[in-house]
Length: 321
Image (tube, rainbow, N blue to C red; front, side, top):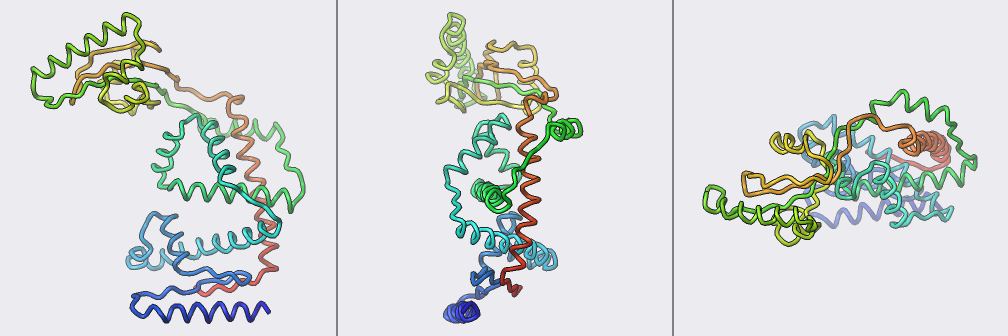
């Protein structure tokens, strides 16, 4: 029965392909996993997600590298098909809210806001949707290990301490500052009269701040820069990310202190130092859960890989790439 199903799927794909006579390149089957197909379109789509490059251009300029990447990605797709099929058989489901909860937990461990987390992903060339898929697969792996391996994973305290001592550099932190700002924008920065008018407005705002008026209220009322709707909150910055002039000013400020008016290239700025996190190494207590999760995930991956190898032996897999 399975052979007939595979034959039907293959013939149907070829027939569908023949209808697309005007297409430059016809999609094709690159693998069959227990009757389920993986197409070249699906493979190229994932190659693009993992490399951030157009697969057609990658193949054109470096066909050898393209094929190497394709083989790696294809193996991952095959493993995903096997795992997804088994998860359905076991009745395991990973909801979007499960993924949301896991991402929020990761953000808490990293000590970053969701906005900062998205920025980190972008810097590493990972799309948010691809990251969500990765998290979903990780949760699914944990569920499968719990159902199939049925042995409780225990991470001794000694292993956590050992990991911490060997990877202390990983937990080193740079100095960070959280800043709020009121920015008065100049339409023409080269007009001295306009700068004078803005300076007078800034001085009035400073007087109101000294009188005890709330910084965030004044930011919402007067600021024309980023974070105005959030009461001027710009979030956390590594001290080295700030321009030299601002870095020099903030260096001598105390938390809660306001500085200004400051003439900037495009207007006048008033800043408040909301928080300061000094450079150093995070203590073990602060990163214990994070280390536990790393070691736990490694153990899950080890057991999952062993389980997957057994599953592959029993599966029908045909690669046509």
